[in-house]
Length: 635
Image 1: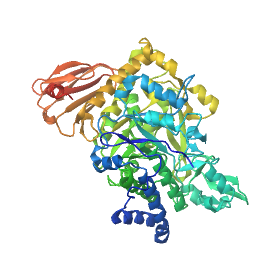
Image 2: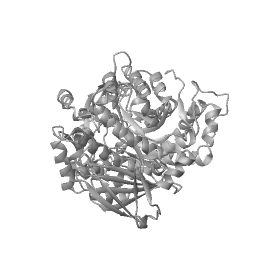
Image 3: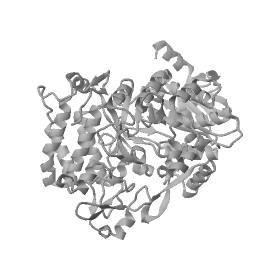
Image 4: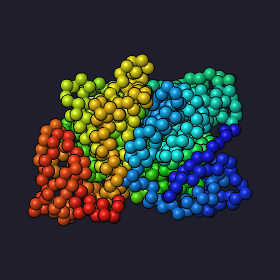
């Protein structure tokens, strides 16, 4: 039995710790009959009525145990929580591996906590730390988990996680699509343990999954879908979407679903305010289908949301689905019954295309129709990730030739490209493997460093101004270059953007004003600090794309209450240019404007605002009267 330690979750006002142990002297959870029927209906859709009735009792028991860990203060805080309070403009996510930073004296997680604590500016910028899987694993940099319920001792302990959670909200990874071949779960299956018999999708012959069935499976790899293992009584072939070491969990077995739900609730007691459902697209293995985006998968997510609405209403579900945009946004459900946050996978390749072509037309056209279904949903606006720059999000937004152009340019910048098995069994580009700095700037360029940094910051600014919550991978924060040597050593293309950094060297470079790192972080931090202060950037504020010029990405952001407006202008080219903005259609009667980034004023004449932009300039203009009002109100 795992010994638990006190953890915290965010409430509307404060963090409140879960109890170490369940307290059964307080009233048990009472599940309203309407909610119980909803849960039963979800289970019946997945397993049929008989199976649903057989396992609803165990599900209720799991929920009651979780609820019994709650102190009365937490229950009271959740009762006044409003779903519209999920997100604000102050939300910003820093994404990192638990061991991306190392030091001579501390564990990696303790090193991360100390760095965040010492680098005090981060406290005012990032609200949430997403620590990529920090559990024991056998491969895939943490995504082949051997034990869901332990912290990898090579990284640290649950106490280290708790220490980071004292200052930030935490996002955990729910790597629930698959489990390591070296996990106890799979080893017990091989051992013939009856309780684990159907925890994986197993065949006694590879021919049981026919060639026609294999041909229509869609997955982000080109390896064989089945992997042979020797079990206690015979050879078996196991469904492995991602790699031979990553065994798909068989959700057609309701015991697997109950096991995962119990794990999800453990993460919440351990401090997760957000749970990222990794690779959830491929959750449900069903021969004869594509195996991707199945309705059963959506029902599992909806069931998870139903459960959290009952026992953890302040916790947010995040879906990571690197698929075409129109499929990606389906994981919002109806706006209240599925994920609250969806990764905005179309954004990174569109930003690359914009800066490679020095033309914002495609990005502007897409952003003009960008929306989400309710005030309780939003996008996680990422650019670079630990995996790479996904391409599937723009599959039906950019043409094949335009995507090929992005790939060609990225290759010129030293990037690798990974492929997947698409429809009909054909290979197609899946992601670009590169750091964001190297993707935006040619490493061998003789351009002045200040111009390269300016281009880089301008590209990152687009993820800050669009509706949603910005998420920044640690290497994107510090502008790391491509690590080709690691790729050569490990033979894994994704390691190009996973370099281990030494905390002492990083801190030294940040303190030295003459380093590229110090200059870059200073310029980027300025935008981040403004972003989290201004109400116009609230995820539920409105946005209006202004087609002023292909050279300029222009966006008007307006606060939820309509009292604050910020006109964002980003020059996506290496040329200076003058832009004239007709303010009449914007219905903003303001003569004097102030650039929050450049810290200078601009004056409109006859409802025309003319602004001169230097190469890669970022200008965020606010009416001076609104700026003054904000100062007077103390905001």
